[in-house]
Length: 260
Image (cartoon, rainbow, N blue to C red; front, side):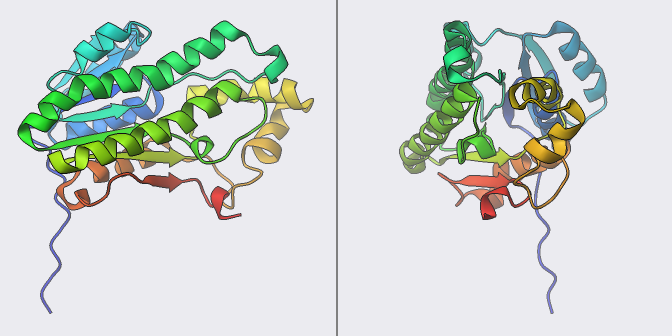
C-alpha cells in the first residue's frame, strides 16, 4: 500500500501577526509559527515579555519581530495588520464579578480588546489577503464562546461576539481564498487562568484549592488544564494547506465540556 503523504506544516514565506504574544497561548503560537518558518509579528503591550520571547525564538527557521502595541489604540491595531498573511487574534483579559458589581469601564475595555480590536485587525489584514488570494484568520475564542459561565459577563459577551465575527469573515473571505476559524480551548495553563482562581474563590465563597476541581474543571470530562502548546498546534494546523476547506467553524479543545 502506498504511504500517506505527511502533513506539510511549512509556512516559509508567510507573515503572521499574533496578538497577546508575550505570554500564554500567544507566546506558544508565535513560537510554533516561527518554528514552521513564518515571519512572526509578535504584538503585545508587555515589553519584558516580548524581549524574553525574542530570545526564545532565536535560532528558529522563521523570524520573530516583537512589536509593542496597546490594542485599545484601534487605529494602530488596524495599521499593524497590513500585509499579514496569517492573523491570530489571541489577546484577552478577564475579570470575574457579578453583573451588578461589574465595572462598566472594565466591560468596555474587555469588549474593545477582545472584539473591536480583532475586527480592526481583520479589517487591516484583508486587503493584502484578498489581493493575493490567500489568507488565514484564526481567532482564539474559548469554550465560553459556546457556553456561558456566571460572573464573566464581559468575557462571555466578547467571545460570543468573536464567534460571529469569525463566521462573517469566513463567508466574506471564501471567494478570496481566505479562511476564518475559531479555536475554543477550555481552561488553559496560563497566567490569565491562574489569576482567575482567587477571583473564583471569592465569587463562589470557597477556598482557592477547591476552585480547579469544583469550578474550573467541573464540566470537563478530562480533569486537567490544557497546555498552551496544545492550542498552538491546533492553530498551526488551521494555517496549513490541508486546512483550506475548513472555514467558519469552531475547533473545540475543551476536554469534553460541550459533550454534556
